[in-house]
Length: 127
Image 1 (cartoon, rainbow, N blue to C red):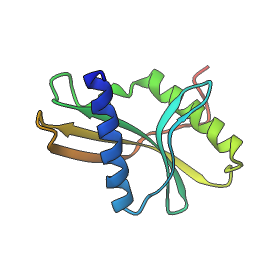
Image 2 (image 1 turned 60 degrees about the vertical axis):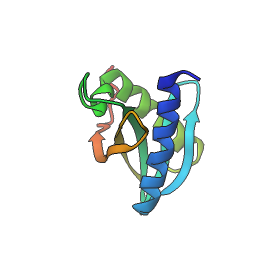
Image 3 (image 1 turned 135 degrees about the vertical axis):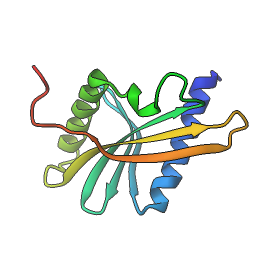
Image 4 (image 1 turned 90 degrees about the vertical axis):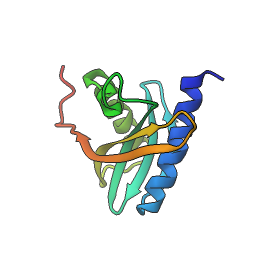
């Protein structure tokens, strides 16, 4: 398996455990539709949390969260709207979070950081 792919899968599993320990209820992992993919969808109390997980082995190219650029955010928002509509969850509050994870070369966790409300959806998709 490609090293980056296996690092990503490892990071997503760490993120799920981390989020569950914080009281999140995991609703979906790797939710896919024709629009895109969301790594984790979870309930945090009465709020739907759409979570992008970014795992890196260093900060050499910036913080992991910096990889979630505007275009990636738009894809996540559109995919989240698809999930909300498909599952009739329009009454729920929702937000977009990022879990960034730094892993040492021997697979030890260097840091794990939850960024709640990492970006917002203002009702417009910029078109």
